[in-house]
Image (tube, rainbow, N blue to C red; front, side, top):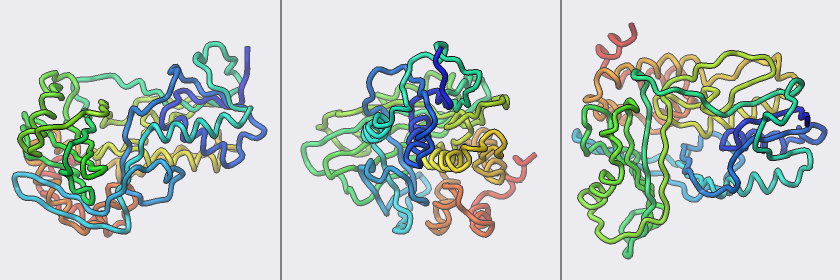
Amino acid sequence: MKEFDYIIIGGGCAGLSLAYELNINKKLDKKTLAIIEIREKYKRDKTWSFWKVVDHNFEDCVIKSWNNFTINSLHGSHEMVNKRYPYQTIDSGLFYKKVIDSLKKNQNIQFLKDINHLNTKNSFIFNSISTNQIHDSNLWQHFKGIEIETQKNIFDDGIFNLMDFNCDQRNNVHFFYTLPFAKNKALIETTWVSKMDDKSLKDYDAQLEKYIDETLKIKNYEIVYQEEGAIPLFYPSSQIEKNRINIGSAGGMTRLSTGYTFLNIQDHCKYISKNIEKIQSSKLYHIGKKYEFLDNIFLKVLRNHPDIMPKIFLNMFKAPSKTVIKFLSNKSNFFEDLRIILKMPKWIFIKNIF
């Protein structure tokens, strides 16, 4: 049976990001790596977006950046501008091609379909496959998005809509998200924060059709791409095992209050690459204990008071844009955290601490 120094289980965003980070930093020149991935071919299947608060390796995979965005609810609309931290969108198809083309040049890296054919006794394993179960009490951010092209120039591609709460909430939290890539092209997503067992919320196609027709007032368009997904808004249950580290969402890299994961994955990969020679004795990487604490309170409020969440989000984004973006991207300091906390309904949040 074959042996490898390192094994990455799952060749998605986290697994490929780690392999790429190790490769470009010459950590695999004298070490072998197996990437376990069942798919035969890679194609665009995801769209990853985030505020660029730190540098990353994939600027050439960014298909659009914005400095301006809006939040809409029944309580009003708010526009924000921040030129320091642009909001970027990465096309997963470009990401896959860049990474795989790079990895194929290193003969020490192999893609395999089944870990059971390997001798893993002496390997260090990085696992990106989550075993999250759907429990009644767990919240998920689930969505479907379609990229449409219109015959006429309809969109203002200089500004995107982060959240539009002017839609049917159905006793949960629901918003639409619009990323205009060009004046005649945009990705439009219907997004829910709810339990996953409520099938009545998953009429995504009807929701999107209604929103495009009645809110965006677009009658003629072509769907050129679509994606669907679900992000767990709870930390994965995993045991600490010798010679094994979880990465990606399986490793707790999803920010629970937002669902943002991509840049957290990149930070984690840099940490692993820097410490790879002593990875067994290195501390486990965390997004940050203070964010875990604050996000858990936030999700309790969301679960118990979904009806007030649109107003809470709108109020939060009335803080300075730099402050909000750094808070949502895990880069805020104590005073910035305080400015966000002071925008929250204090009594409701205090009750949900306990």
